[in-house]
Image 1 (tube, rainbow, N blue to C red):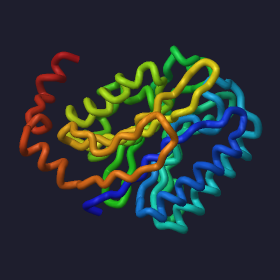
Image 2: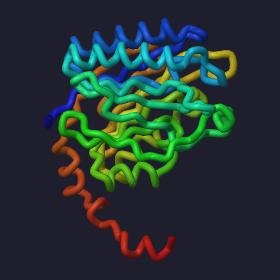
Image 3: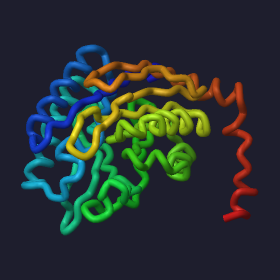
Image 4: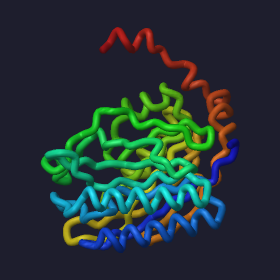
Length: 264
């Protein structure tokens, strides 16, 4: 698919109500599909409050999530990057992102690699170890969860493995929204790919999330930016812009990996 319509679902998260959150996100995802989106992206940790360290009946909750998004993806012939949710695996909690393909199957399960100690994640969440990359309608796509976008090494690894689109599911505080926007643009420019970040916009007792979900093209230009209120909007991404950007400014083709390796 040469032009990819991708929906950014910027939502509030209702405290202590994962069922309500699931219903709202399923409704927004269906609405985006009817408006022409082929890919829908949701924010981080929408199934619980941000600082909660335990979840009840996580196995049952995961089944409900999988069934709901699987059904929608198949019905609308679309892909869904279902944000991230807290899921228990044996003795640990994982910050996990499920990606559904147009046949309704889970084509990628990605566990957040970089755990942010500033937000009390170090204790409840176990960091993942596997690169998150998949194919969405002919677009090789890299998946990142919030704090992951701070690490250029991870983003570069995704692009070196063929990604032309980076999708960031976030829960970024309002007081640092300038950093969020700068990082999304920087990852696009330094890798000459599209980067789309989808953030939460709810206010909790300790953290207020800042919204400003955005899509940036390989030239570093903002294609779409939301404000700090709940909204679902579609960005139209043109695949040919990746090669155009790399021809106009040969950053990607001017890398010196043989030299870089000597310094490691």
